[in-house]
Length: 197
Image (cartoon, rainbow, N blue to C red; front, side, top):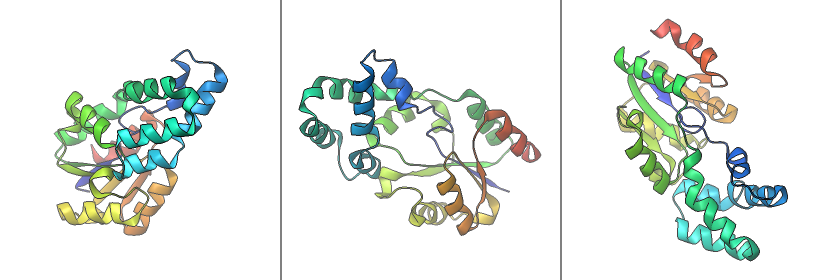
């Protein structure tokens, strides 16, 4: 094994929009509506894909629910604040890097917020590279996300371990020949990775 590929959302950075919405002090039914309207929308996927920008997405959300326009603005302005480091996995990533493994990132992420996180957290800058969905206009588990990573960095999937919190993403990686681990818990991941250290 030479290469370790990390997903970012819910592997290196916490992403729990329902908890975030609860913290805004809104009524329960408003929370639920905003969760569906924004985080479960096709527009959210298009933001990840890089095919629309925030101005376009915000306009669409407000057209769908004009009575929630202030709340929509608030969510879009603040949602990145929920993205806090999952310390156990960040420490593991740094240990793997120190042991000499090549570290890569493969993640569905929106341009504006990814750039904020990249500038804020050093662990997103210490890797050897990566592919983020908005850069290539596609999303995991699309086959091309994985093959772009492999060809861009000339990686052999049989020498590469992929860590993700999504079963579908892991299954697609396995089809291509990656070694894969479904992330559910920091201690469990550390135990799984321990033979590499």
